[in-house]
Image 1 (cartoon, rainbow, N blue to C red):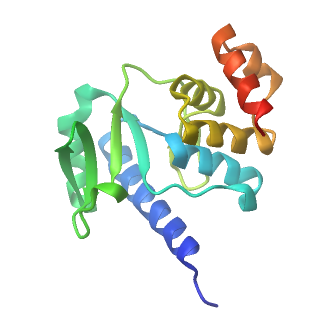
Image 2 (cartoon, rainbow, N blue to C red; image 1 turned 180 degrees about the horizontal axis):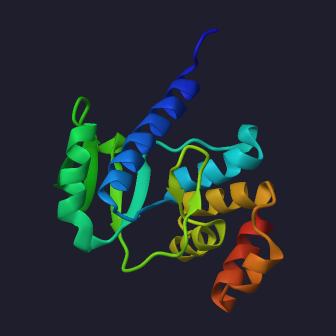
Length: 175
């Protein structure tokens, strides 16, 4: 079989996420995959054909762990970079910022959802809040993807503030 560009990119993202997960697990460092790749992974579990590919991986970590993260990922082929105000881990063999793991600093974590290969994901409820708070076009698309496969439940909606409920209604009105 011929592997398509899409399949190659998916394989690459999972390979990078797997290496990162292994490095952080071995070092005992908490993290959560967030953003577009988290949305992709959640949707992919329910309906793979509906999962929309993203080009990078965003990971929430504690800023206090940054030095330990830099050391923990080095044996797994990552290099730390800070460029244009963004903290990232790039593949040492192909150090391109557009395909990096972007680090987002958070003060604490909600419980993780473990993906089938051990990757720690932000829960759908927390991802929804994050996407509704940012509310950029790509965030609204990710919300549509999550909603389109039934991942946004009435229980999650009930947890939203009035402002975020209004934003969710706006996204749904544009579907």
